[in-house]
Length: 401
Ligand SMILES: *Cc1c(COP(=O)(O)O)cnc(C)c1O
Image 1 (tube, rainbow, N blue to C red):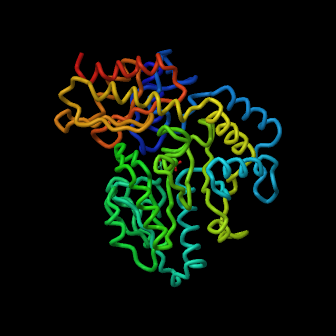
Image 2 (cartoon, rainbow, N blue to C red):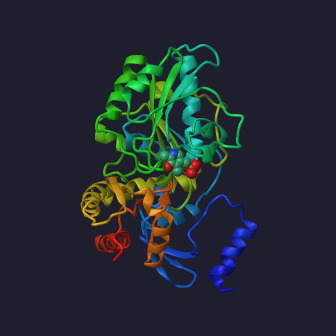
Image 3 (cartoon, rainbow, N blue to C red):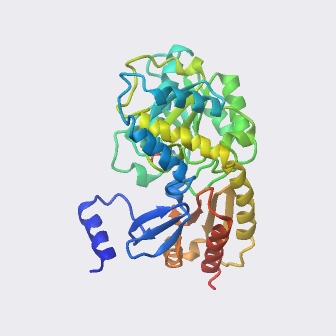
């Protein structure tokens, strides 16, 4: 066995099989490029599902991490940490909302938003004890905890993991009337991804979020927007909800908030909602630790100072333009906003995986999302020449040249 085979063998023997990775073993990363243990170079067009909007090992972020590491990494929320106050203020102001609750993973932040919405329902909306419901959407993805998979519609995410948490109503995505039809007096929230990324980059009609905002306002319901994947520049604005000119009541962030270096997630909302959580009612040992806060502050700074949202908008348009003109008999549709792009293949193509494997051989790392979609989501600061080169490879593989 060579080194690659040996390391894959170890991973498959001693690691649980909860992923099905492409058969390569990475050792190093820098900006939009990664290198495997055999020294092969690849362009990273997955960006860790948008945790790497700033690329690998961004020097400003690495420095922020190292500087903080020398001071204080973890101290628990039993004390105030210097970075925590700065981080909370900066994130709140950046989102246009008032208060931040910091956690670690995306799923935890989604769970936190669900808890806040329910508690808000009981305390502020006077919903009857334990009767709150939240409206979710077909094909949603919000993480992997039991409560979150309770309202998944994907058998792969759900089957075998019951019994499930009650209190969720599922309606079709991109259909405002379907939402209105299921609202009742106990509805406390509408929980939505502004673009359903894991489902295959499903983009709703323009103005959809605005319609949901309106429905929420008329019915005294919280609009809970999961921007873990779409936030921080990915779709060509700081947050995807800005394309619709609205504000959510609860904004959920994760992934790139940690600058591609470590996990940190957050729920952000206005005081009138966030104040329902009081000391002792929710928490996390590592949530809001100073190391993560320092990196997140630097991430927000890099996003702003490098103009990455505008860059994603500009480059996304160019990429979409190129991909929609590919002479290929296997492409069904190309969808995208900013640098979150999906190429859906026809069923006759036999699944997206083999094209991702072919692309890896040509030095471009993409991952299939669901069976038939290739996701194109490079770091937002990828050099334009590298981006062009990767897209050329994709076009070449899909047009069989
Ligand atoms: C990745 C993701 C999550 C879950 O985040 P984890 O950090 O993997 O728990 C939730 N929602 C969306 C939209 C995501 O893309």
